[in-house]
Length: 527
Image (cartoon, rainbow, N blue to C red; front, side):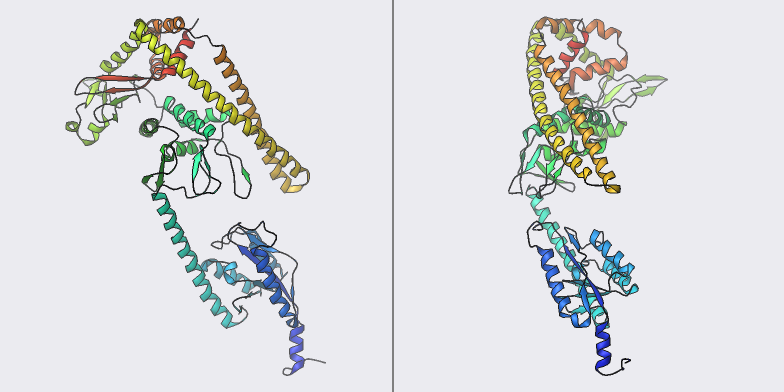
């Protein structure tokens, strides 16, 4: 019998039409998802109960699970949501049931797009707790209102969270996220503490750049040693292996005031609650070198006029760098080192102004010669060189400990990836195989650096440095210096000297020696 347009027969025919319902669940964070019954389970249970209450309407729940755990509602980049919309397009489902509408989206623009997409494919959207069904005009109006309020709430929470984090930063507190190299987050969170082996690496990185101010060269050396950026374990137990260095990540580390006990917020810097791992003197030295490299194009910039003290000379009066500044008059080149402070603020603001390059370079070279002829200076240099060797030995031992731990982690990672690969095939196995290759490459690099560290430690143990060897090397400085070309002379001075301070008002000059450089010079000129 054909259904009548009024009466119970028509209602029965409508009720008989099957409605395939998909349940979509979302939670913004991963907190609590490891529990046996979590927020996603609660949402699904409520949605399935609602679907059962509509069984007389022909509603039935699909077995497919569409759960996005740990995904924000601020955008539509969610794997389960993408599968849900794809199934809606294929006609797999007729109605989507959610616990609340903001589970679908907290962005009005995204929700409008999703809603139009569902309407186009004849799919209704039902909210269990808000009694909304988009198959009716009233339901569609309520949807637009609620999503607008959801977006407002999301933006308001975002502003409050941002304000809270900024206030915490101003008080010098750690506000979360991945810890930087050299520090670990405490078990209770909210604070960072020094990781001693990593802190030694950080100090070594700063000292490397101070000695060789080139981001490319230093990052290449770090990768050659097998050193990596921060490796850490998340709250959920996921281990994140540190990646290789490049000039961008190295520059970011070298400019971070966190390493001198500060916290940064935009362009402002505040005292931090954590301990510093490097001295402010070393940090400032690195900043000046990086600033000089930005202006001159880096350490590879051509030394056209034979400046021997590039990056070394500073004005003692205002503590500013004195870059090489040649000028041409009557076809002749006159070389000077000029104080940056005087250049920027005017010559009257600084007593140093400028100094003839030949004058200051000759003085510095003469001081090196003096060490070679003065027994007292030789004795002091020898004692300081021994202290430098001991410090180097401590650093290599700490590096060896760090490499040993990283190798153990790398081994575990390789075994885990190998087991996973054995259970997969197709495109998924290709991705795992790529990760496995990278893990094996890292392990090989670490083992190579481990062997180098062992050799360096053995060399230090067997090294028989004595006063006679050092005295001979310094005595040979003069004849060696006379046959060197300008680039080689510059390298020798960069090797031996950390900085030179010159005061134009008093004429005084002070040299800070790079003590480890004397040992390198002795090794280079030894028979």
